[in-house]
Amino acid sequence: MVELLNSTREGSVWEILDIRLVSAVKDKVVATMPIGPHHRQQVGYLHGGVSVVLAESLASLGTVLNIDANRQMAFGLEINANHLRPKRDGQLTGPDNGNLFEQKLPSFG
Image 1 (cartoon, rainbow, N blue to C red):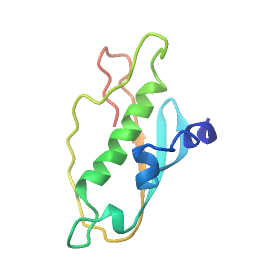
Image 2 (cartoon, helix red, strand yellow):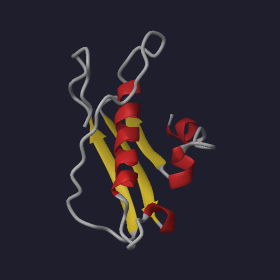
Image 3 (cartoon, one colour):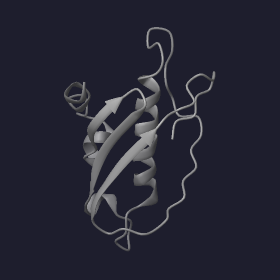
Image 4 (cartoon, rainbow, N blue to C red):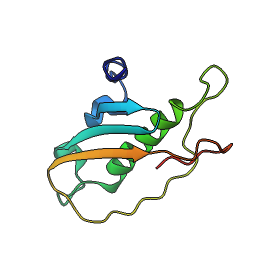
């Protein structure tokens, strides 16, 4: 499944930001994203919006893995982010754990 999902990156924000899925199972989705020049804001640190894209992507994918995709669609409704420390380079690894899928409006993360 990971290979299939990574093959759909072309033309998407995942391709632009070089987000790569590492694992995807019902209760955990993990992806990586390198931090390069196009991930940084003007003073050289990771742009907060870029890390939110990673979080939103994992939450949406995690939701898709837990719904009946023939009857439902997954879209982000709301996101709140706290940026705990600045980062200039390296790689972000985004794990996301979902556990509230018995609700009508699941919360993933």
